[in-house]
Length: 432
Image 1 (tube, one colour):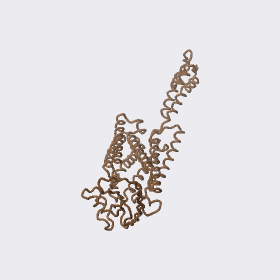
Image 2 (tube, helix red, strand yellow; image 1 turned 180 degrees about the vertical axis):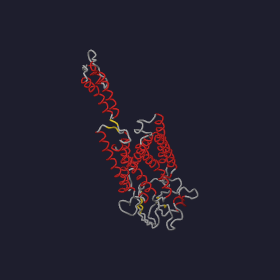
Image 3 (cartoon, one colour; image 1 turned 60 degrees about the vertical axis):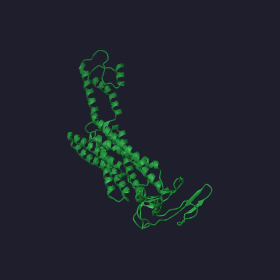
Image 4 (cartoon, rainbow, N blue to C red; image 1 turned 30 degrees about the horizontal axis):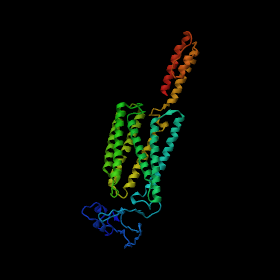
């Protein structure tokens, strides 16, 4: 067993000075260990009971190491100093810290993550329920508010991410290990929600549903390329880090070269978003929309800079607290920005600056009903019109217009009244 720090002169070297040191032989490294358990018959000085029979060999050992110094990492290493002899073994190592259920199974730098993800989950769940209720109200009112729907997808992704993280750490607290599938799924959901919010900010900066319904094709292509580059780089960095990371090395994930590269990409995306905001802000005459833009710019900066700020924080604080501190900072910033966006995007407030339209199905219904209204107006004006089979077919296909049966009816301007009423109906639909 090795430690990351010297312990009361029990050893002169710590793990990073021994691991992969080309100047030390295997026997020299073994001599630097805190203690060692020979995998051979009999008992050693530490009291490890060994049993060796025909075909089966086992070692049962329990040792309590009391530390009165700063926290440290402990490494359990299997070493074979006999050249040419393969080492085949099955091992199970259980390390515990003082404390109850909330901390005994966790490493010192991971203590508190269970409570953190539980708190973030309840905060995100409250937002997700509010978003779902508001989305249902929009559906019942037959209204379309796409930015709110996109934001809702991100909120639910974050909520499920915190739920899976909580499940992983709760399982870890019980058994000493967690389901890696839950942790990977949580990371995927977290990254997906992060990507959705970044795309949403880029679209809003272009005036989506604010000044223009859809950004210009050139800007859409630019946003798509930028997001694609971020996704590809993130995937490559994550896969390379997962495949090549040395489990015996003390490297924090936010202090790796891959993380710094992602920070650069996020800053570049923020600059692109800032250029879009500046151009849209310059062309917008509405004071209400300008106020929203100013607040959106601040939220956008916080979202894109949460990772760079956390990396700087991780470099400045102790390695024993940086993991939980980084988790708390990123989770708090993310939850605060999402809460503010939910506050701004909810329909009763967003109608002052967003374009909230009637749903497509409702517009089709209005188009189908238009000609029938026109006929009644024409009859009231004195026009001798009647519904023919051709008009019925036109109404069924949703085409606007009125066909008068028989001879033309010039009396009292009925046809002109019909055209005027039809124009009013179309402009009214457009206003909705």
